[in-house]
Image 1 (spheres, helix red, strand yellow):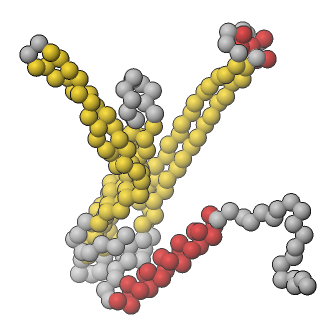
Image 2 (cartoon, helix red, strand yellow; image 1 turned 180 degrees about the vertical axis):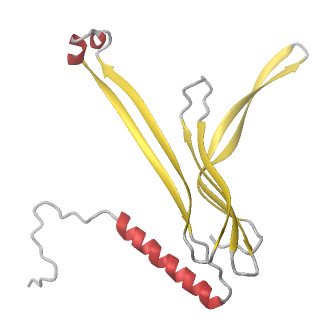
Image 3 (cartoon, rainbow, N blue to C red; image 1 turned 60 degrees about the horizontal axis):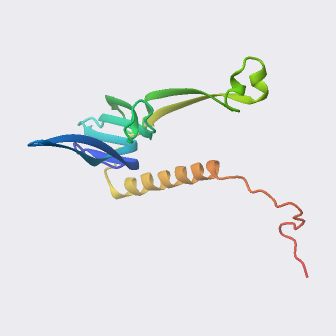
Length: 193
């Protein structure tokens, strides 16, 4: 994300999730319920305001948020529950210095069961007619920030090229490995007539 001195910059990657709310109206002797829909932004958000001092140090005001929409299970309202994790800080760093902003950890555990109704609930015998599931999911988000002071066009081109190389490297790491089809007997680089 690029930002000018003393100017806030924001980037968000995510979805706009519809949420419903109900309002009860009373008009004379009649009562009505009005449903309204509003949209909440979810996903990953980074907001930064840099302040550059005369010595070249960069003071950063940082706000991050990771949010997601989940099915509501605590009420009968058909609207998602928004889970949000956020961090805010102000730091001073040198240009090009890596700073670890912080980490956000989340652990979700769930249990479930399935099987033949009633019979699967009988102690000992029920295991033959049903199954139990236990799920555990842990996510860790660690944020690294490397501010760079860009004062001319060449530095801007260099920073852009460095970012492009890093994105290519990440793309290579995340790309699925090629899989040969069963019975594939062709060799690479071999010519056939």
